[in-house]
Image 1 (tube, rainbow, N blue to C red):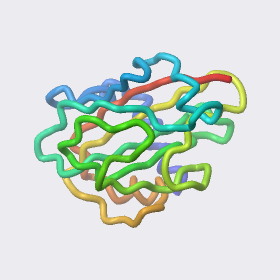
Image 2 (cartoon, rainbow, N blue to C red; image 1 turned 135 degrees about the horizontal axis):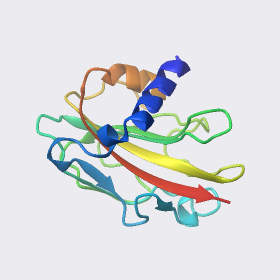
Image 3 (spheres, rainbow, N blue to C red; image 1 turned 60 degrees about the horizontal axis):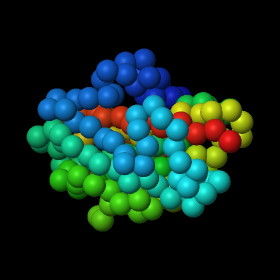
Image 4 (tube, one colour; image 1 turned 180 degrees about the horizontal axis):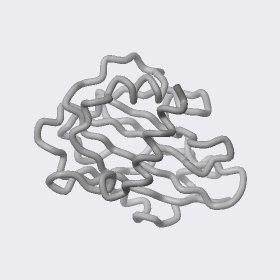
Length: 170
């Protein structure tokens, strides 16, 4: 099933306008780094390995929850998931650094850990996509679920997309 996840990510990369903004200006940003800019080392494995602060706006009407998937498409083995968080309340406007939002559920990242694991590229500068999806459902999966399980569960339920991309190199 990893190929289905790759296809999803490739579609988002091929159609960035769909990913960057949705109806009503759905958006995600961070006071820790600007769009397309370098992420500070403190957010990575070379620092505190803490998730960044996030700001969310323009959530589409009808959204019942939000899903955040953080991925590195430049990893040597293909798309590498760093953070997977679902059932973020639709009214969330800020996410504190170093924590998942209250009430949200976290999945297993590709480091084999539940929660956030920051950028840790083996070489070169990699891109890290913070993909936020507004859903018309709550996701009924247990903590620790995989990226593919979550993406399969939300298929057909995405009512908006927003994206933030930061870079990091060692």
